[in-house]
Length: 136
Length: 335
Image 1: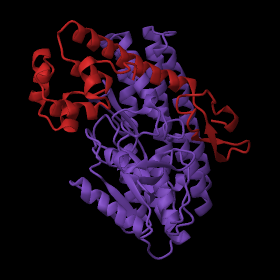
Image 2: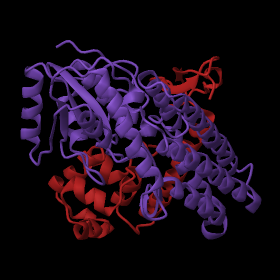
Image 3: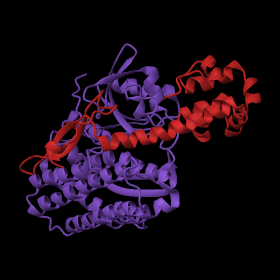
Image 4: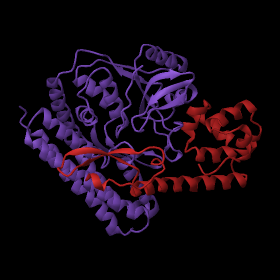
């Protein structure tokens, strides 16, 4: 890649920091050039988030339908699966599976809810009501 | 503590470069660290999924670049993992109190200064801690333009991120030794190239090295039928992210490797090194051309089987260029 061809499409990262790219100068010698981002990878990242957002929306609907507890919504929002959530909370996977049932979730102690809330970066109240910003 | 922040394309290269410069290895640069550490790689692991896509990597396993580079330059390395958070922080504070900047492996999911969009559960990020003011640790993150800070809670959280490649509070640093001579750098370059030839040409099995690129190219041609257009698009987006996302310097590290071979030429004036460097530039350019084509597919502009065939063919062509490049590197007559 030639130095002048290093793309400068502003990405989410580009607003915070530019990134180092390696490119060649007119004599063919390698040098570095800062880049604000590249459209091709911005859309790749968007694509990944679109998929996650679809999952979050489906989870939200399940919770509203009473088929799952709000934990499912926060799991998808946190891009977590059972095993990762178990690692972060210290619960066993079979416990989390139970907590995903709305009836069981309602009986959880504040202490247990607090463990989930901390991992998801929300308050216990937000956890119960699914009222956190659902975007990301 | 006096510490110079150095921005780099890739985090581990950057940490390696900064920490080595800090103990007086003045010759070290990011491309040299990457090349001596034999950082270039390719692997595609269809059966392990991350973020619902296949694992694809353009570089060697985390930690290896630092270890190999230090070893090649005869520099002792200290590397520690912890089960206790308290001990992990106590050890970190001891090092800082002695005026020693240290490398930490961290997860990016809770890394507060990263934009939300980049915070996946990726646990092989590297940064340097070089001081503490009140409750804030002073952080030199090589992918950032300027130094930054994390509170002790935030730092503990990322040092003890969970999931695949969990860092477990991992800390590492090089110990100052005799000054590194140009002769040592020269030997390091040779051993790094030999190791990389080994990894790209002779790793057993179909999924890694040059044959892994070819394997992936052939698989891509089947993705449309096997996965459906939507999922296949997501897989291609994953490929592009692994190839171009922060840290690779562009073209899946191929440009950094090209830069390394040019720098290698300054230590060992074999003109073949410059010619082979051009091959890596070619390969990097082709990886990026392939990424543009892939974007056409995941943006929905392209999507026929012919488009997937063309995508696969890009990788087949790249595989041949890199096979040629590494074969030439293998056949170098070292002076």
